[in-house]
Length: 180
Image (cartoon, rainbow, N blue to C red; front, side, top):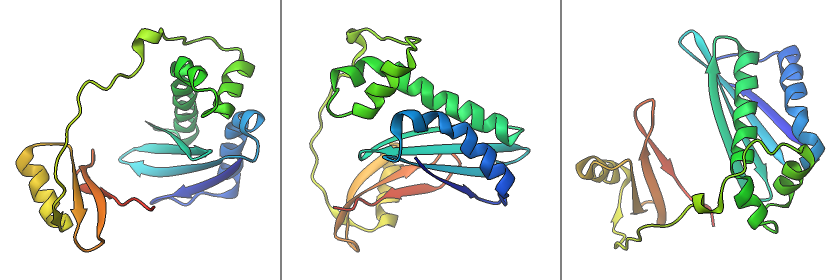
C-alpha cells in the first residue's frame, strides 16, 4: 500500500515517517499495492491530530483522532479505522463484489469483534427533490445560514457544476467540487 505522510504546521522527519509506515503495515497484508493511504498530522493546541484516509477500489475510508503524543494519536486513528471496518462487517459481506479487499481483511483477521444484525442496515427514510439554481459560493453560504442546515447543494455559476457547501467543525465553510 502506498503511504503518503504530510504535516500541516509540523515537519515530519524520516524516523517518524518510518514509525508511522510500520504501524500502517498491518493493512499491507490485506490490501497489498492496491490501495493508497494518506496520513495527515497537524497540531491542535497542545495535542496532535492525525487523520488517515485510505482509498481502495474507488472507496474511501477515513478516521481521525487526537492525542498529546503523535504515535498515540496514530495508534488511536488506526484503531478507529479497523473498528469502522469491523462495525460494518455485515454490510461488507452482503456486498462482497463491491468490497473484495475489505471482505478478505475481515475474514483473514478472524476478528468477529463486531457483527451487527441485518436490522441495523442503513435505511433511506426520506427522499427530497429540489431545483438547483445557479449561484456563487458566497450566495450558497448565505442560503446555508438562512436555512440553518449543515450543508447545501447548489449549481455553481462560475464552475457550471453541482457543488456542496458545508460547515466545518473548526469554523468556516468547505466546498465539495465533484470531478466527472
